[in-house]
Length: 157
Ligand SMILES: CC(C)(COP(=O)(O)OP(=O)(O)OC[C@H]1O[C@@H](n2cnc3c(N)ncnc32)[C@H](O)[C@@H]1OP(=O)(O)O)[C@@H](O)C(=O)NCCC(=O)NCCS
Image 1 (cartoon, rainbow, N blue to C red):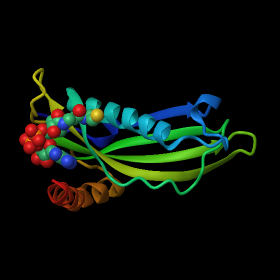
Image 2 (cartoon, rainbow, N blue to C red; image 1 turned 60 degrees about the vertical axis):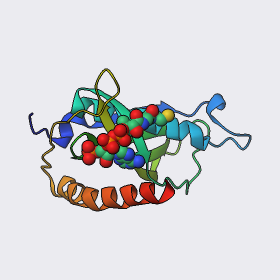
Image 3 (cartoon, helix red, strand yellow; image 1 turned 120 degrees about the horizontal axis):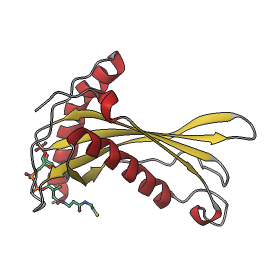
Image 4 (cartoon, helix red, strand yellow; image 1 turned 180 degrees about the vertical axis):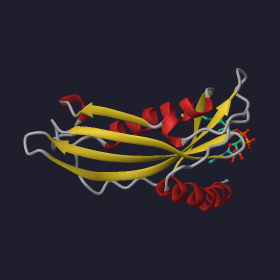
């Protein structure tokens, strides 16, 4: 097992919002954005784990700002912390209007992925070693978020 840096698995996905991605108001559909976020997060998790990973949970995602047809969506995915068989990934979504040259933050979320073997059973993952103050802050917060989501999962069961 080798302790990896968050920068080794950092993932940037860029998409342009096309007509088939939008609702009748010309806004990006929430489900399409969640799909792109899932893929970006899975790539970051897969790069860290070097294993097949499955989505175990998606924390609350708020759609506070509409993203319009023709805008460019950038999704940043970074592994915040590795646990035994799971990793937490933070997603930050930005939207850019190329005509106006303006970029704005749209939303953020945390996804949890579990590395699995060929039979779909959880398998240990490499540890992660934060380097920057921002990475350290995300790393420290991950433990609290994990406790909260596992408690919420138990309450739903
Ligand atoms: C995720 C999955 C592999 C976990 O399997 P499991 O038998 O419950 O495994 P365990 O109880 O041993 O838990 C394994 C890890 O998953 C984590 N986990 C399980 N449920 C979780 C949840 N709801 N949220 C976050 N993490 C979760 C555990 O905390 C544990 O992490 P750790 O080893 O780092 O401590 C299994 O539930 C699964 O295959 N789910 C379907 C995944 C899928 O198809 N995703 C796409 C949805 S369409």
